[in-house]
Image: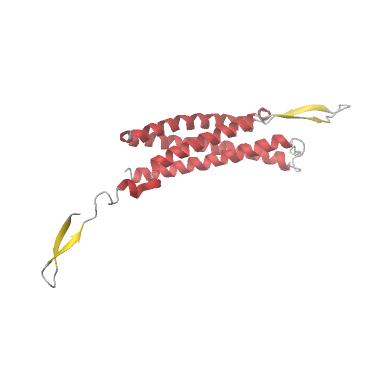
Length: 204
């Protein structure tokens, strides 16, 4: 083990000061550890893709048919409830398609940047900008669909809108699950935006 000599101010004799071996000295990679934003970025984008794709599948499979008594009909007739019955739900599905496709592409880009860190700065600006755009689209679609879903759950006596979730319970459960997953995806996009901001301040 190598050592350095430092004179003792009292005795004037040299003291042996042990040096820390290079293999035990802390390195920037060790100090960063699990807080490496590049690795967090990849994991978060994989979760984003899983959340948006699952939300999309749950939403488009929310069809339910029930026998209901229509005005003028002598007997109950089958009436289906589907997501394309509401423009708000159609907008929500389109937003989920866009978010799913973007999350898949951005995940592949993020993995490529992880293996080629010299391109990190260029792609970081590109991804952070699109993260904010997709966050705005998905959050607005989630809020719009959530407002319609709330009317279906509670109704609106003042406007004469009847609730439907007491009849189409399976349909409403699908809508609620899809909205919850979409809200989770929006939080992931917010996390990605924050991580991008931290990476800009400390690119290493």
